[in-house]
Image (cartoon, rainbow, N blue to C red):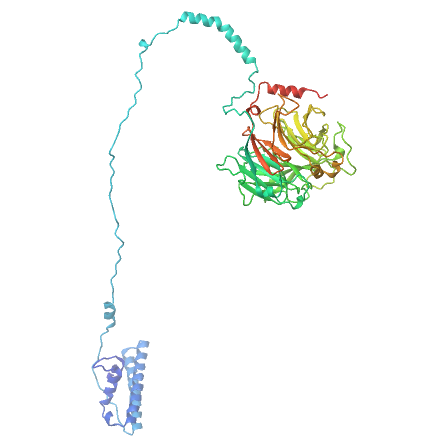
Length: 625
């Protein structure tokens, strides 16, 4: 069975610009029904509605067949069903119009329309290409224009046969040598046994006849506050000098802001009024000491009792270690700090501090910027050796305040302490006796004192051990005397009266066995009161002229200074001084005006004379009367 009308409804056709719906309607109009044009207008609208329904019904039937993949017979059945629906709809319409009509089957040709979509897409194809910029190439060649050849030829050797003969009479020369041989050997043996040139070193530098001032250094903000230079120190290279600013007289030290300043003297364009490094410190700095091997590390003791270590190469964050305010910290001002090598690790160093609270503490730098107490010593009055007569301590006084310390160059465990009571003490780090004190500490405190020396007439401000003799040391005090002691006896070997001035510092020369320097100046009552008020009643006040630096050469005179250097002109005392161990011709001194002066010493203070070591040994062998 052929279903031509169903084929016409399903297959799209485009002929004479007619849609599939138009063609279906055209086939239907071929039936024996009345022409559409003769129907009324309402019938025309109804017919238009019917056309839409028929076309939709036919499409649905075809779509169902295609979606289900039906066989031809099934497809034909589907088509017939669509045709039946159309016929039924048509019959109903005819009946509604009052004009009965029947649909007739017709066979029409299949129309096909070629697709234009692929052709259009092919036309739209584009071809693109990309080319990088052209690469420029060039060729070059170089040709030298000049050349030269050089040759070196030694002189032609002279044949041995043509060497000139000797101009001397060989028999007479031999006779002369035999005649003087015994005398020459005798003189050589005599010179070999002589000590005339012992200690002599050739100095190729220009001879300096006088002591001159090379630099006058200061920090205006510190000087504007009226701060004193309380300590000076040279670093291990000898090119940097540092000073501490604080006060050694009356004043509100607890709230006093101070400074640590350093100048590099080898820097080109040195500004004496602008230090290379400035470190602000919340408390007065009483003492300084550069590290023995690290040029930028420096330790300081504060009035508050703290001990700090700064790294001067980090000016924005210079604090390397600090003790903090704990039970281990000193409760009085720290008057001196010293670097000491560890017992089993000589390349590692610890910081030793002494203060007027009677404690001598040894600190080790650990992590987290902390100084940790490793050893501690305490000076108790009842444990002082009674080998010499001492002033009776005041009632209630149990600790002996320490003001200065110096270590032996020959025994690293042996040191000398200066005290407020005026008597030096020989002490040892190897002491085992427990200290009789109630002062709190995280480590056991021991009693270091082993020997007591004859006292000064006032507190001892400074001590210095000889670098050339194991038993000799110097001490200076407010009584205006410098005492030369031997560790083997209590009485001083000699006592130098330097007028009636206070002596604040004394240092032994690092190159001359019989040369030392002392710093002096006018004494103020506040100076002694700052140490301990109870001591002031025992010593009368002294008021004397301006401060100065005194250089002594015991080989020339044992009673008066060889050179007197006027550091200040306005009665300001000189509080500290230090020799430069690398550039031995330099000496730095700080005063109460906040000024550090660097002095260049004359040659007589830097070159060791003949038999100087023997003279020092002879001086040490003397017995005090």
